[in-house]
Structures are given as structure tokens and as C-alpha cells.
Length: 326
Image (tube, rainbow, N blue to C red; front, top):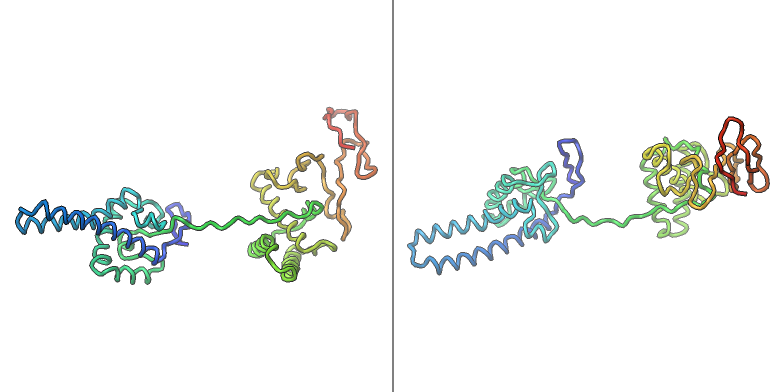
């Protein structure tokens, strides 16, 4: 990254252009400028043949300054740092604070570029770019500008696989504050690339990462839970907590109906349920039966997690009209 910081102390993630791409952009600009200069010079030779030698020399100097110096300056000013060569290579000239350049920046770059590019055939510009940490030539240093890349390849978005449904909310009581960010990043990278790894290598990585997470949380992974599923469930629990902090007391949309995100929240099409707390689940067992919240004092659990409906409201409480599913 470029390390640019705006006046509001905002760090900009801009990538400085490399020397090969900058050289190619300058070469394209020079080819266009020299072609136009030669065409204009030939036209002036035929149109000003009747003038004396001094007038022809003055016209040649004026054409050189206007086309090889003024032309690039005006193009960069009007396009905010995008010349023809830079457009072709996906580059752009910006200020040190990341903003678009103005006429004075383009003028300084153009005037110094005559010396370090045209008169020295680009040798001075190449040496200055190699010495500079951000690849700036002398014109960029004096003008306070930087050439950055506009077209940056976007990496494909990798999604973390969801844990098994029977692990949703199982780790809502874990203390995840002691897990460092680099360990979260390692777990996330493993989960997004688990299908690309060799089964044995992936298994070993999962066991090592699960042991590291368990050591930081102070609670070992439950017996019978695969390390891959354990990592996915812990990562989902962290995402649910971050969504709860970002969106308030409720969970963010699309959190998979994770238990603990919001009271009574469940997946679309299912009945509102609450999972039993982790402290009430015996070690090694998986809570697969939902516990229906008590609708009143007379609600009792029976059968496979069913509850007796409360048809009559309690004293002092209005009827809600909600009947838990049988």
C-alpha cells in the first residue's frame, strides 16, 4: 500500500504504480505526442516556407513547447491525472493526500519531465523511481504527487461454511475475548480452503487450530464434535456477537437463526425456540431438542419437547394469541 493519510487522518489503501507500468505509460504518451509533433512540424514547414529562418525557428520552438510540454500538462489537468498512456495501463496521478491533481501539479510534473525524461531519455526518471520507496520520479517529488494503480485485481470472495444445525448456539457461553485476531484469521482461512486441502493435512490443521482456540477460550471442544465443525460453530458465534454489537440487541439479517442473537429468533418457516444454556447440557451430549419457552405458569414439557398450550390468559396479563406448535 501507499501509506497515504488524508487531512482527516484516514489511511488510503492505494497501490503505487510499478516502474514497468509507468515506463509503458510514458512510452505510449511519448509516441502519441511525437507523432502529433512531427505532423504539425511538417505542416508548418510547408505553410511557413516563405518566412525567414528566424520565424521558422520560433514556430518550431513554439510547436515543441505546446505539443511536448503543454499538451501533456493540459491532458493531465483536464482528466485529473489520466493521460492516454495511463488510461491504457490503468494508472492515475494523485496528490500526496489522495486527491485529484490540479494545473500546478501537472505543470511542475511536465516542466521537470522535460529534463528527466526527454533530455536524459528517461534515465534520471528511472533512477529516481528505483530509489524512491513509492516509485516517485523527481517531478512527483517536487509536485507532491504519486502515480497509483486504478485497476486492482479483485480476489474472489471466499465464504466460511456454516456449521451443522445441531451446533447452532452450542457455544454461546464461550469467552472469545482472549482469542487474538491472527488466530481468527488463520481459522477463517482454513475454513475457506478446507476443500482444497489434502484430507490428512486438513485434519491435522483443524485439530491444531481447534486446540489453540480451546486453549484461549478455556473450554475444551466437546467430545464427539469434529474439529472442523467446532471451528465453524465458534466462528459463527463470533459473527453473531459482532452482528449483535453492530445492529443493536437483535441479530443481523441472515445470521442463520443462531441462538442467542435475539429472543425468539428462528429460521424462516420454523417455530420460535430457545436452546438450552450450555451450562445445563451434559458434557459430550448435543442438544437436539428445542425447548419451547413457557407460555404461562401451567406450561410443562412433555413428549419430544412439546408444551401444553395456554388457552386462557393469566390474571393481569393480556392474551397474546400465540399457541406453541404441538
